[in-house]
Image 1 (cartoon, rainbow over the protein chains, first blue to last red):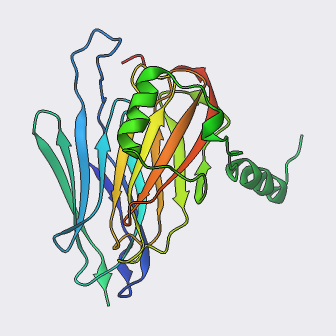
Image 2 (cartoon, each protein chain N blue to C red):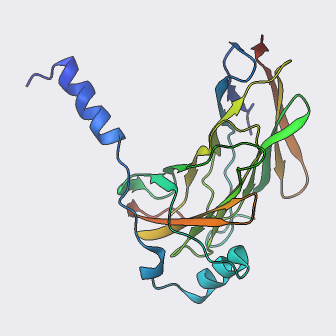
Length: 101
Length: 150
């Protein structure tokens, strides 16, 4: 598992639509047909200024190295956290910020 | 052989702009586990086949990484927004692919992710509105190498 990668604009106006891209390296092993034990993320969550804005529940048909693109309306102060939670409860997170004026 | 920059860009734009022809969900024959997964989402409601556009390849080289963009027609205001988007496979070992949760902070109901398709199949997308209405759409992608080896 390597560091999650996040793409955010550096700055935006209040209320402006911004594009967010995320990627995390993870094999997402379902153990449905292979010999390896199950190793799956359960949930991805993005917060802006402490409030959940976007989330995703992973099921077996989600691809390895999960990637998302979504769009939010920027709000000051523009602090973002991104959290991937494994089925075993372990969580990986990344932070980012957009200068909102 | 010579390709001008302009012709390369325009051919790339043409292939990238592929929007799948919608398939009527009612026309699909569904396995019992898929029908059960859909019933759990609908919960007695009737879905309307409108307002969802699916953008994915008609043929995917690698079924383990099939790019999918879902666009739902919604103003995404606090009074009128999409809350949940479900993706269901019809011919994977298990029907569940994943579930997006949106909020009015989301600027538009457009999301991208990559999905696994074990073989050529239809997949279904259901979008739930905050007022309880539900929309549905289906698309079909052929797969060169199946994507469920793990």
